[in-house]
Amino acid sequence: MNEIINAIPEYVITAVVSTAIFYLMSAGKNLLHSKVQHAKTTQSKELWGFIEQVANTAVNSLVGKNLTGDAKFAQATAIVQGTLAKQGFTNVDVKAIEAAIQSAYEKSDLTGNKESKQFLDPRPMTSVKDRLDSKGIPVNQNGDEANGN
Image 1 (cartoon, rainbow, N blue to C red):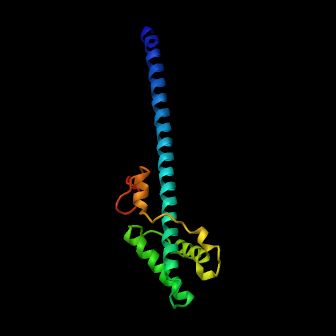
Image 2: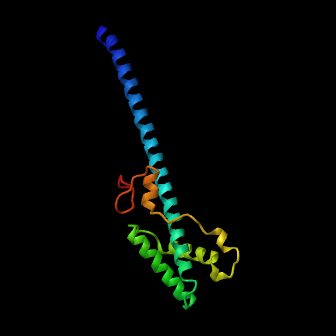
């Protein structure tokens, strides 16, 4: 009977320590998940900014060309896809590229909008990988997060 009474504090301590370890592991997992989600969101935001810059440049480079609207749109799409591929971003949806080109077209001189220049981003184009690196978000050669997700 004394053995059972002496073992109770040991079992209580084991249960408390096990519960604490489980709680800390769970909290650590949630913290890690939120950090990964934040990194993905930041990477996506930077990628969208880069796509918009490239689309603006592509559309503005085609303003004076003697091509049909469809030909300019196709050429701008090819320019943006090529630039993204050179930067290692091959998993961007074509619909997203086309939406960025349409947005850039609406801001360009092709629409006759005299206020179009105020919307163009005057910052020089920098690589998405460089912008992510400057914010401390590691990326690998494919433009994905360095942890493989």
